[in-house]
Amino acid sequence: MKRLRHPKRLLPRSPGSLRRRLVLGVTVLATVAVLVSQFIGYTVLRSWLMDRVDQQLTEFHPPDPAYFDALKKITTDKPPGALPSDFRVYFYDASGRRMDNSLGSGTKPGPRLADSVSQLGLRDGHPETVDAVGGDGRWRVLLSSGPDDMNSVVALPLDTVDGATSKLLWLNVTLLVITVAALLALGRWVVRLGLLPLTRMEHTAERISAGQLDLRLSDTDPRTEIGRLGRVLNSMLERLHKALGEREASEARMRRFVADAGHELRTPLTAIQGYAELALRPEHRPAEEQHKANHLIAQNAARMSLLVDDLQLLARLDREPSYRREPVDLLSLAADAVRTAALHGASHPVDLGPLSDPTGGSELEVVEATGDAHRLGQILENLLANARVHTPAGTRVHVRVGATRVSAATCGTDRPGRTSASPPLPLGTPVGVVEVADEGPGLTAQDAQHVFERFYRADPSRSRAHGGSGLGLSIAAAIAEGHGGRLELDTAPGKGCTVRLVLPGQRADT
Image (cartoon, rainbow, N blue to C red):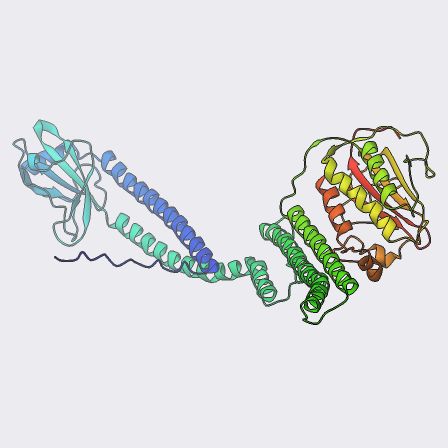
């Protein structure tokens, strides 16, 4: 069996450079335009010359005596009436045969005519073109009727017409060659000048691809196509540069996060490993020492479990946060958090009051927001726990609940002395607010800038002593941003800390 051979696939030709295609395209279009104009001029001139010859043939009629002289075989160059120069007149008798006598003189070969009228193929009064008897000349002939059923053929040579059109044709060819050569030369220069901005763009792009990412295209005139292209490319480069910066920052944060997580996990793991090795030693130990070792193993295991739970929660919040969307009473949520804090932290007095009363009071109103009550409660519990952990015993903690609108004087937007990991909310947006303010020592501006970062501690030794992982505020900020709000911190050294949960809520009159 013979195998079928597939035909060889033809590879497409390279399209060539844009400059070359533009030059060739302009040259071809201009050449076509010149050819069309020359063809029209040639056709008009030839038609006009032929019309002049036909007019001369039509206006000339051989006189009747010339027919009778032809019958008598009288030859004369001057018949009755004037015979114009270059004219030739041939006569046919009544039977249709051509007679030997003719009018006109000259050395040029005459027209090629048939011996009978029936073989001429001419119509009376309609000029036609015939070849000469010898050479490459041509004649314009016209059949006319004469007396006694006789006919005559009047002929004029077309040497003048052919000579004029031939000279015009050669002139057109010469002009066409000169025009094409000039177009190729000038077109190349004009196109190169017009594409100079693109050439500059190309050189700039090469430098950018070589690593100079701060370069931008200089041709950005919005009135030109290349300028508009340059503006679009600059905008794209800005976005790419920003995206690369964000990617590098994200990778740096990820590396720092992994390193911090490894550091946090290594401490309890080392403790568990040490006490476990101690428990496996064969020598006998007192029951009190054994109990203490077991207690420390359990304590470090619980700490490690809490850290892993926080990491898993952060991973879920970063990947695909899922919250219930239902009305939440922020006042009830805050009251529950205050009761829980009072049970677990008697050393820090906690009170509940309205947003406009810093000292607490009884003028509390129901404030509603939409979200997940469990997650929002987790935020408040975390804030109260932080207030207990990071302030001395006896420090008062105030929880305030109220409704207001976003402004620099209230909340929801950035201002000096305020820190947040989330973008500001639109001014004038009605919001529900829960504040947790303590009367502790406060934070420095440097510490305040980093409190929402993962694993960051303003006081690492204190937070580790209380089992903190440095993830609480990061989790709380992620939950608040997932609800369309934000978590923000107002603090200064010696003025305590105010952590504010701001959530979009119902309209409030302020």
